[in-house]
Length: 213
Image (cartoon, rainbow, N blue to C red; front, side, top):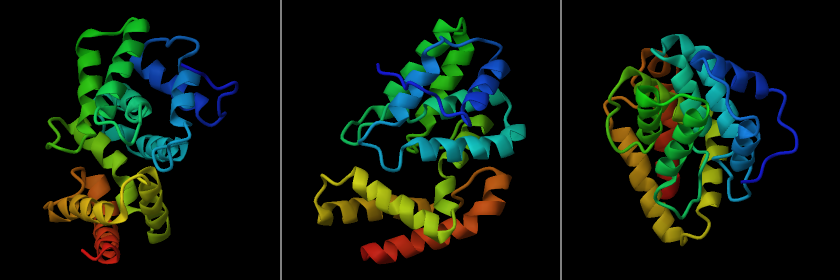
C-alpha cells in the first residue's frame, strides 16, 4: 500500500494521542498508509475532510467515551477502505484496524471492540454499546451541519456515485434519507442530539424535497 511522503501536521498529534490512549506504538509507516488511503481519487465525501471533521468531533466529545482510544482508532480506520462500488468497505476497514492493533501488540477484546465499532458504521442495526452510539453520532454529524456544508456533502456523495443513473440514484438516495428521518432520534447521545438533531431534520427534509421525495 502506498504512503504519503509527508504527513499533515494537524493530524500527526491526533494520531499520536490515539495510540497513547491505547498504550501502544503503531508501525512507523502506518499513519502514512492510512492517510494515503483516505486521499485516494475516488473519494469526494469520504476523504481527509471527513476524517478531520470526525476527529474534531471526537476531540470535543471524547469525554463521553468509555474507551476513548478505541473510539478514536475506529474513527481513523472507519472509511480507510472505500470503493463506492464495493459492498464490504466497512469490513475491510475493520480488518485493517485489527491488523494494525495486532502489529502494535494489541489484540483480544480491544481488537474485537474496535472491529465492532467500525462495523457499526454500516448503519444497518442499532448501536450495541455507548461507544458505538458515540462513534455513529460522530460519523453522522454532517447531517446536522449548517445548510451550506450539508449541500456540499450531498453533492459530494452524488459524485462518488456518478456511475449510477440519475433516476436510480435519486430513488435510492431518497430511501436512505427517509430512513434517517423516520427514526425517533437520528442521534443517540445527548450531546449530538441537542446540537445537531433539529438541523439534521431540516437538512434531510430539504434534500428529500430536492429529490422529489
